[in-house]
Image 1: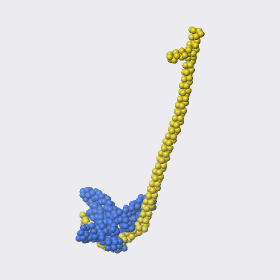
Image 2: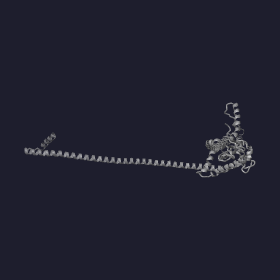
Image 3: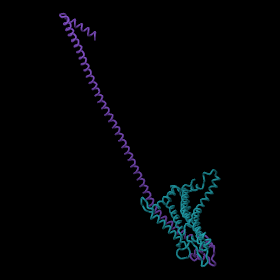
Image 4: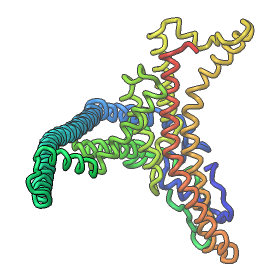
Length: 195
Length: 261
């Protein structure tokens, strides 16, 4: 064989002979490169075409529809799962919004109620205050009136007592010279002037 | 990818057979390789088919939450589906089963070829040329069927400033169009063949320690390390080349569906 290179060639018997026993036909025909041995081409091409047809039938009739179907199924499953998840997420967002709205509504309502109650209390308070003021004013006026009455009563009694004492003093000092009207005028003059 | 080292009788030597792994041999007995002969090509293509069937049957579950196998099958489906849609445009989607078929065949052949003692069907130009020619012819026929002579606009760069320049560019475009199947097939076969051959070469150096200890004590660990490193690289290449082949198919398909620049 042309491709054999012997570093140490055995004397008298080449390795080619040894190989030749195993592959007599090939050895006889093989040039430097078995790839260029055209006598084997029909054989290789025949088996190649047969193999390719077999693989093609296997691939096109059996494997590809199957694998393609599985891949499409998986894609569909994943897509439907994702859209279901999206639905649930949207629902969750909606629920949160509803919750927040309910919360803010309740807050507003509570504020209203508080304001209403405050207003009612204020009104009651104002009314009670006014009533109390009126009562106080009434009783103050009454008290003033009675004070004035008492004061004028006291003035009259003072002048009466002064008149009686003056008459008694005049009667005791000058009997028979009692002129009641003159004495009263004189006492009144004195009281007013002294006062 | 067996380590093929043979000592012959009392004589010792390193034996290099880096290309023997690519020999097409009949499975049963010897004789000539006819077109119908079951060969190691048959065996490894059958194993490729078995691998694809395993992935698609075991990964063919219908669970909404996929099992591991189902996940791998679905990942490869969406990987290629997205590639066809993004690179080849939406109109390329009807050809997704064909592209997926070629991807599965190449990726399983490449990885099966990495098994020790395996035969790599995609390292043969006969195999990759059939795939590339199928893509080339299919795309060309599709282009003419969809657009009639309008498909030729693919070669006419209307954004070029002068007519003379457009003619030159058209010539270049036509040449590059016809080179496509060549580069498309040789890229894959060449990558697979080169990596496997290099591993074989290092594998042949590995038993040096049994011949000459002084030299081998250094070379043997180094070559084993190199085998490991290149194997790791080849694992990467096995996937990348399947990916590249498929994405180029999508690019060519896009050109056929949308020929105007």
